[in-house]
Every structure is written in C-alpha cells, then in structure tokens.
Image (tube, rainbow over all chains, first blue to last red; front, top):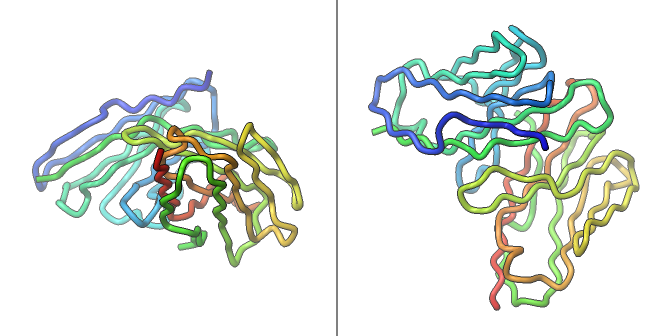
Length: 114
Length: 112
C-alpha cells in the first residue's frame, strides 16, 4: 500500500514562529505536493516538486517555502506564522511520467496559529 | 490560478436516493480523478479517468470523462449513510508533469 505520512495531525503555534510541516512517502514517487484546505475553497496548491531540489510555486505560495533534499521527503515551511495560515494542510505524492498519475494523500495536519 | 468549478457545493439527501455531481473547466485535462474525504482524514481516490468519453464504475459509483475533456461527473446510486463526506474532483493538465488542480468540493449528507 502507498503510504504518505505527515509528521503531525494537530499543531498549535504562535504568531511569528517558524513552522515546519514534514511529509514522507514510501512509493518512490517523483512528484510531491502541498495543498491547503479551507471550507468552501477546496484544495489549493501551495507548492509542487517534481524532483529532488526542484520546486514550482502553486496558486498560493506567499508566506510559504519548501524543501526537497531527498526524494521521499517534502517539507513545508511557514517562515513567520500568521493567524490567516490557520488551516488544514495536506501533502500528496504521485508518479511523474506514467499514465496512472493519481495522487495519494497523507492524513493532513490541522495547524492553528494563535 | 486555474480552478475547476464543482457543483453542487452541498447536498442533503435521503438514504437510498441517487446523487450526481459534476466539474467543469475552461482548460482541457488529460486525467480526471474523483476523491472522497471523510472528517479528519486526507482525501482517498475513488475513480480515475484517463480517456475522453471513458465511463468507469467502482461499486455504486460511476464517473465519466467528458468528450470535450473539460468536464466530468460522478454518480452515486442508492446512497447509504457511510457515503457522507466531501467529494472532490481533480484534473491533470497535460503539460505540467502531474500537477493536479482540485474543485471546491461537494459536501454530501445522507439522512437515514
């Protein structure tokens, strides 16, 4: 079974803190994604990585950065957390160059910034 | 950014009823995917569609990839209480190496 694991289910952080969200996948997928989920807005892509050290901005990258030093791990970084970054964060992974490119998701991290 | 228009946003139905939801886009997609998310969990893939016109079933679920490649629908027949959740469509653009765009979601409530 494909497994995408996010390091925390729930996090509470203070405004201004630097926050790291970690994601690990065990299927040798090239692609990894970070999405943010808010009610009524669906899943919005923050960043996308298609290879080690490669990244592309998604639709809402402001206030976030990412790191992909190893193929299996993709980290989302909130440089200085703000209350409007309170949300559910979802990591996903998929193959890049195959016809069956469905993405598999982690269980999500619910982040609250106070 | 690019977005899919998914409707309806929410549905309240009686157990046993059939359900239909759809997604449309101004862009042409190579792949359409349908996911279900239960409370507190990440989305789980239900059905994947890879060819225009393709009709695929998974138990009581049926999904189709529109001929124009700009739309897809998902039907659930004879709904049961465990169908409750948020259903998302997702489309993959052909020239972006697997990048997936998601709809806003359809929240389904089933009354026993």
